[in-house]
Length: 115
Image 1 (cartoon, rainbow, N blue to C red):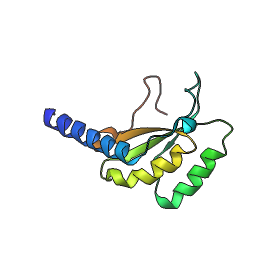
Image 2: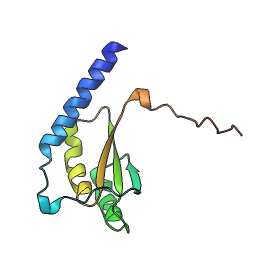
Image 3: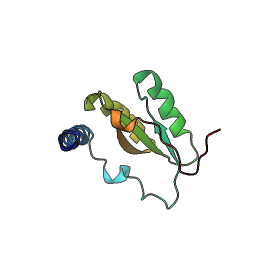
Image 4: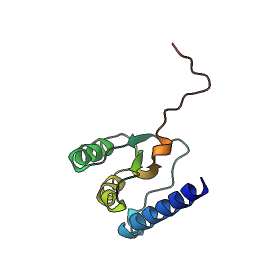
């Protein structure tokens, strides 16, 4: 387990460094204001080129700036996400989530009941 956590932490750090290095820092004029106390968000788990344009358009057309949570798949290279993160970041706040085989099990609320 310790070996898995170490390799996962290394992978996360490498991916974050690659994404950070590839995305230029916005100028002061391009920076968004601080997050409001309440916000809206969407989860994007497929930011491939066939869907990216529609996703960016949909985010742009929202009445408020949303937070777009992008799911980073375990098997993809960090470079795969550079263009989608840049494009989505031009119309929304971006938050990333790493998805591994260990996080793919369905979860249930304590209060949910089986039918």
